[in-house]
Image (cartoon, rainbow, N blue to C red; front, side):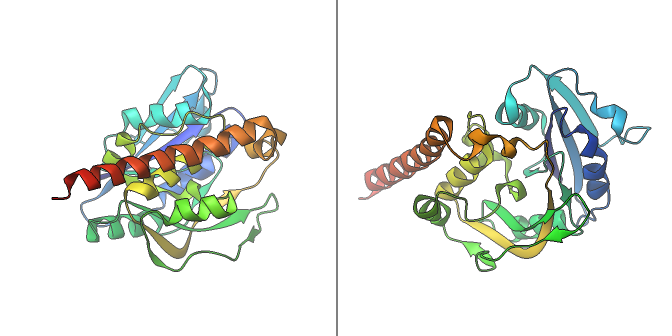
Length: 253
């Protein structure tokens, strides 16, 4: 059995890719499980292999495609994945010990759960970490709860950079929402409409903060692009919810 770790990488995050790999290589999986790392380059000049240890780990699969931004790049990685579970790992982030094993344990033990997320700490340039308050209760996140939180607060209830999901659900949604940013929030919110999730209270990701992050772009948090992205995230989730309710009503005797 296999879990596919998907990483989109652009030139700005390339210097951190070796640290992401080290955190992945240190994972211990349950018996019978293995991981593959689908590294997808955003454009053909990234050269990810040059910053990774040689010889290249045979579990790493690197490919490039025309530059299209994070949503397109992640979805191209999804197309190459072969695992039944999908775990995202941004090129500049790091997994913590046990992160993948916890995801696998929940998704193999609870067939009704479609996806998982976990606690995050920010990894600062000096190597220190900063945590946050406001995480949901450990365990099940009810179907639709993430959308409700989004509608009220215009921010995700849990961190989308920690998402692990069943591959068939991600494929059914067409991968990541085709917007310039917040595409991971769009996928998480849509997944929450079609299946309940799970929150791990253990820290599973160190989220690196650095000047080259796309989230530092002024358009990320305000302006016309931001408004359109926010509208698209909610409209797709609302449309999914409405279709599901309509189909449920049709099936009633």
